[in-house]
Image (cartoon, rainbow, N blue to C red; front, side):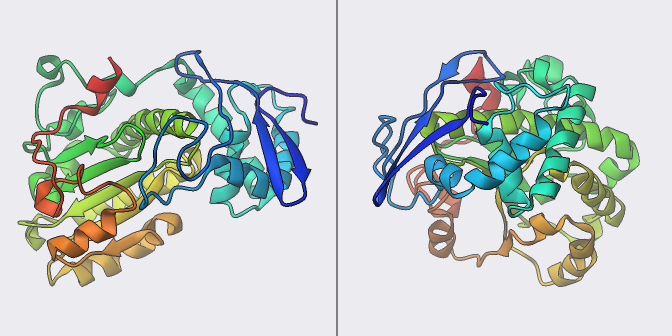
Length: 335
C-alpha cells in the first residue's frame, strides 16, 4: 500500500511522530525535492517563517489525512493515466482537503483532473516563465504571455491585473484593479471557450508556482486575490461578463484544488450589495466562502493581510512598506 513513490512512512512514538518523505519528482523540471520534517521556525528547510505565517505544515496535514489519502490513492492508481511520481500524496492531499475528506468525491475529482490534464497536455508545459500582468502590453513586445491571454490583455489598462510574489517562500498575491478592466469589452470580444482557456492556462501557471513553493517550504501555499473597486462605476460593470466568469470558474474549480487562500475586496462602493446579490449564487461555493470585504483603513488592511504577506512586502498604498511599482512580471523569476 505504501510502496509507491511519494508515499509516507509514519512512525508513532508516544506523543511524537517522524515523517519520512520519499524524494518526489516535480512534474515541472524533473528535479527532485527532499522534504524533511519542519518546525514553526522552518527547521529542516533552512527557511525562517515570520510569526504571522499561518500556512499549515504538510507534515501535519499528511498525517491528519493519511487514511483519506490512502483511500483516494487506492481508487486512482488503477487508472491508466496515474503516475505515482506525478500524482503523489501531496497532490492527492489537495483534493482531500477541498472535498473535506469525502473520499468518493475526492477520487472522482482526482481522476477527472488526470483526464483533463491529459486532454490539454498540461503535464508537458512549464508555464511559469510566461506569466505577465494584464496590462495592455502586446505579447510580442512584452516577450511574455500565456496561451489565450492576448484577448483578455487587450481589454486591460496599465497594470490592471498584477501577479506578485512578494516573498519567494510565501504565497502569491493577485491585485485586480477593476476600474482598469473593460468588462463590457471582454463580454463582447471573448466567448465562453476563450475565457475558459485563458483561465485554465492562468490557473495552471499559478498552480505550478504554488506547488513549487509548497514543496520547497513544506507548507501548503495558495494565492490571495485582492480586488480593488477604487474608481469603478456601476455602469462599467457587465452582468454578462460576470455570469460567464462565474460559470467558467465553476467548470474549472475541481481541477485546481486548494489554490485560493481568499478573495479580499477593498474600496467597495455603496452599490456593491446589488452586484454581490447577483454574482454570489453564480460563483463556486468554495470561492464565496473565502470572500471578505475589507474596510478602507490602511492599517486595518495591513493587519488583515499580515498572514499572507509581511508589512515589508505589502504595497505601500495598502499600508505596507513596499514602494516598488510597477512590480516585475511574475514570469521573470522563472527564466
